[in-house]
Image 1 (tube, rainbow, N blue to C red):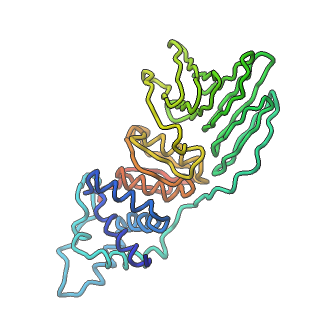
Image 2 (tube, rainbow, N blue to C red):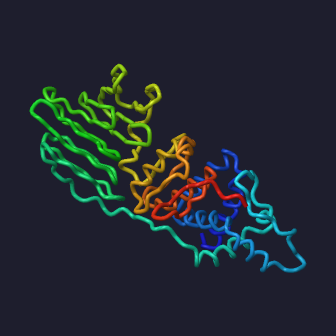
Length: 335
């Protein structure tokens, strides 16, 4: 599809974003995921439609006989419908004006992941390893176990004669554990300890919680003040302040540790941004931590963190702004 046509469609979606129902939002996400060009165009249109300069361009370019109503203020965060001025202007005119403004728009720094290096062999004890931002890594342990380390994540290996403890200090990792009944393999993350009972599982540190997904076998979950539970293959649990609730998932589906896509189905906003942030050279934050409880659904590319953050902001009614050395999602300013 020609760039002009893509921009026109993106302008229409961006103009109607606040009025879309659940079905239309699913259609939008499907269109965005068709190509990176769609995502770039939508991100550009969504941001520029909130720029007063765009309305000034449209106003200056209109024929005198086709005058728009009196100046329309920019949309307030409480408005549910698209801006009245934009609804009266064909999408092709919005796209054409926005394309010109885009040439001078500032684009946040974007991190692109490099190809993962060959697996590294970890020492038996006292080994600590941190993966770079935007790059996943593979670790091969001396006992035959492997660790798939997410980007911007850190593990510490402290194997001993009678136990194989691992500390996940930050980020996420997936563990494929070699069986050794005499030396239990456990992962400590925050206050929770996950002990493998012959298994393949992942542990993900998120704001306020630690998620465990068991792909094969069983894992015992221990945390202070609560009775241990056992999670089996095809089950996952979030360990935090809330009571434990074991849920089902498809262990055959691509996970967030082996795909460039983040698949969110009612995921908390702070959890989604934490995962995307591991691939961003620029920190991604929420202006108000309370916004982290917002639920989010859709598929978002991890290797284009700035664009995915802008898309997520558009879907939940938040605007990405550069604040110092970070990208901050915040409610739009009153217009």
